[in-house]
Image (cartoon, rainbow, N blue to C red; front, side):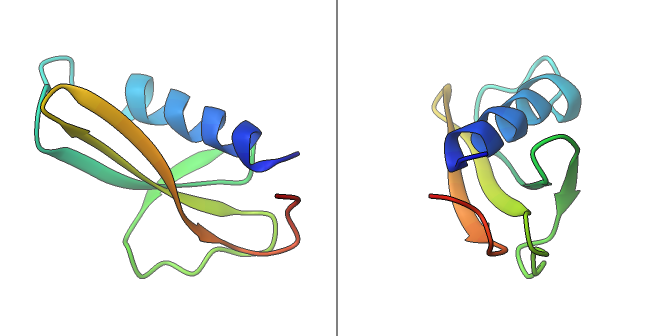
Length: 76
């Protein structure tokens, strides 16, 4: 599984499972995923092998999901 697959998983969790319907600005979360499961974590969370942490944000109505930390052993 490559980074884009992990990113899709984190994006789905962020946009559909963790965000209230009325958010359009100033909303952010750190989402950790192993490619199948997701959970919200703090910025200082250290991902395990085969986990990635993404910084997910909404600013001015624009959604971004960026790789924040890589736990290792994952193809880039």
